[in-house]
Amino acid sequence: MNDPRLARLARSSRSPSPGARAWAALLVALAACAPLAACGDSDPPIDEADAADAAPPTDDATPPRDTSPPTDASPPDGGRDGSTDATADGARDATADARDAAPGTCATDDDCEGRCVGGTCAAPTHTDGKVSPSLGETDIDCGGPTAPTKCGEAKSCALDRDCSTAVCSTGKKCVVGASCRGGPNGPSGVDTCGTGEPGTAGAVVESCCRSLPLPTRTTRRLDRYEITGGRVRAFLDGLAAANGGVANVRAYALAYAAANPTSQLAEVLNGYPGLLDVLPDRAGPSARFPMPVHLGAFPLDPINALDGCFVGDGGYGHATYWQPSTHIKPYGIGYVDGTGFADGVRKYSREELDKKPVNCMMPLLLASFCAWDGGELARTDDFREVWGRRPEVIGATTVYIPWATLLNVGQFNWRNGHGTTCNPAWPGCVNPQRYFYVFPTIRPDGQGHLPADDDTPAIAAPGRFPLDVTAIKSAGGDGWYDIGGNLMEAAWPTSQGAINPGASQVTDVCDVTAGPGFGEEACVRRGNNGVLRYAGPLPHVALVGSSFEGHSRRSERYLSAAAPNETLIVAGDLKPATFQYGKVGARCAR
Image 1 (cartoon, rainbow, N blue to C red):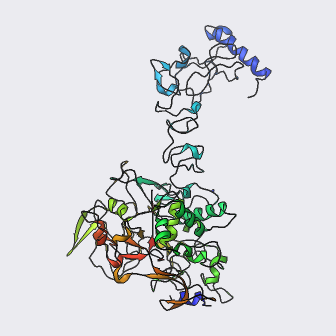
Image 2: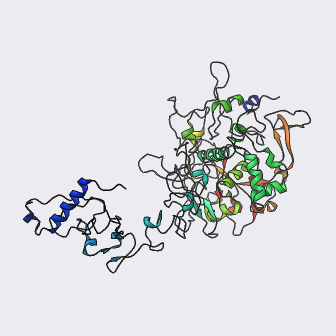
Image 3: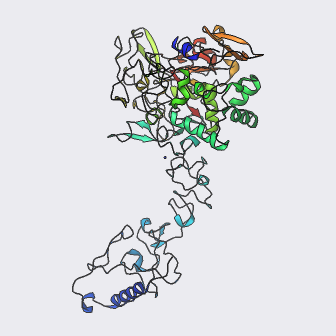
């Protein structure tokens, strides 16, 4: 049995009371007095105004409001406050407003639940452009049991059935993905995406599941943000809740593939038999294909010599997914304590790390997540549609950018504290490159950012670089964030047959978390001994964009081409679907 620590170090109607009836009778008597002062009250009473009393009083002496509940079954007046125009004895209510000219009368639409038509409140409908609570609507002309239209993303809801997305969040808003429903883990990585840190001045944050229609293929949506740790945590919690407490990703992927024959997972099931079996079937470090490794402790199969996933003393690691110490300590993750062994404790809290985009996870696992979330892993043509073909000449090099203007280093998350050469000579590039973004700036133990211990502060939560937004917009005028930087992203090919890894073709899955048992075959990957879990060719994905660490312009020839042609993706920009790397994340499409 190998010691994986050594391998990695090498690398949220009552009835009225008698008093009320007496008060109602008094109000009726007062209403009959004209003028009011003739009844012996020289000072007009004060009208306790509320939101329902938008119309001005008919004279300067506003009579008191009738607050007693009616004893009859008077129908609503169609007004916005849902009150009646008659009191218990049939008299008009004591609040002088536009509705008192005649039952159901109005001056503007604001006086009615439905529309104001010719001075009369029309009955509310599902097509009047207003929220009609009496019809059960939860937002304008949508939601409830009878509305023919369900509410779209970000609209108000009460139940899942109210939403076209079939997900009503705990904040009572329709969200696109099940991962943004919200729950006991709180809002981190769920409602924290956008510009600025939540709670700070000027911050504009929204659902991390926000998904925008593509500009050309308008029936397809590409998520605005990269997948966060909080969303993956919701995925695993959701699987566990549906499976007796066990987050069986493998079983979910196999079942989904069988039920959805045109899906990405079905493509793997049918084209690469046995490969889905490398996905984890339960949590904890003792399982075969251990979940902690799949979630980024270090790569199950170290395809790269260096990956940036292992977080520990002097490791310069930056895996963003937080895991409990009991799950990662057995792998040597953490910092050496008084016992001489790693403590399994991360330097940053789950709440902070859940806001950040995930890395160090297989595209195969993230494709399973996207399927559960109601979509699929974004494809190469999704990125190409939002990238654009804007050329910029930098020295002797022509680059193609996704923004309206060329951004300087520091305006998008590229070469953040990393890099020693500027080729091409990008504006703002210096050598060595200094850190320009770090968050959190202070660790819970009071120390500042120490990259050798944990470099995750250099990776931004999605949307924190407001200028790194695509020039190409969705129909509503919004663009996609972090397409240019932060993390490279794994893009599922539109056609697996069109890509050609050439000499970079990777085969097999060599699991270095264990050695071979009886009847199993040994293997070696990058000098690490392991056990062969899958033999044969692997599906490959394309890398797009740039990373915080300095990788740049991945798949640029394809993204900027006049016509879609996946053969333009060079072999070096293709990686197997089992690849785990600290500079690669992903987003979903739907």
